[in-house]
Length: 345
Ligand code: SAH
Image 1 (cartoon, rainbow, N blue to C red):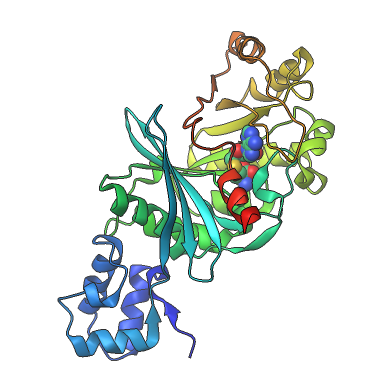
Image 2 (tube, rainbow, N blue to C red; image 1 turned 45 degrees about the vertical axis):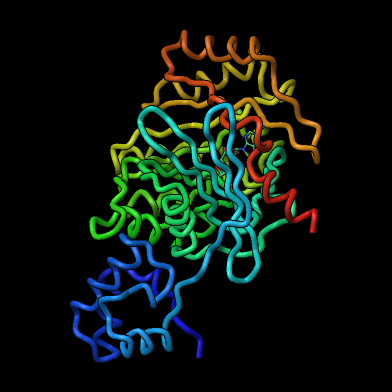
């Protein structure tokens, strides 16, 4: 029999499961607490359940295991990079960043990615599979367990396109923010998307308070197409409309991400076109000097050039930051830790 993934059930679903196997509803409360507060990885840890009941659970359910394969700690800023191993042998990476306002974790939403953005290491080997809600939670739970520190912010900006794994992603958000679990505020959860329009609109209607970040990377439809194959499917105007819809429905200010690539999207014309897009929108833009990856020939602009770009936007009244590079001594760009591992096998 295929065992059900017990950590991916919402509290309501778990209650129903317990009823179906002839157990009292309060069992759901006990188990949910073990899984999502005490972060148990096995049924045997659930010591307030009888052995007999634990055995019954083991027959029908499983807790998908996720274990630390490698951990790197930056000497510069305390950033931790984790490589995790999943039950089927796949590996994923997550990053813990320490800020004054708390600990932030960047998680993966898929094993690999099929979006094909030109400068991104995560997409080079294509998509392997979607992550389960329990596996996305597992990245955060393991980090809390290993470090003994509380995670207060979560950004879904690791490997994968979260809106290409829609149902699992939304369930993950509900579980992570549930007051009966880790209870991370939805306002402290950010999802980054390359712009899958129908699912952006769907997300706007979920009545969530999470922040939506859009990977823009090009200031016109044509320029965007050069870096992001997904732009062949959705016009820039449609993507921006979906952003407006998200803001209208949720009241959450949109974050735009713009990876600066030297000689590709970092000149004055790009800045001016960007200003036209952003000036009448309630938003924030994050400039990310591109992290060069060895498979491609993209370079980041000089610090001065990036600053000039930023100043131009700022002068037009746009909210802009240049993303601070974290953990630069421990591994290169997004997705590179996993790639190095997969390649080395
Ligand atoms: N699939 C999501 C999450 C991707 S990672 C998305 O497309 O938004 C988060 C951000 O990092 C995205 O904006 C992505 O385009 C960007 N990114 C990926 N690789 C990068 C690199 N080598 N340098 C700079 N930014 C990169």
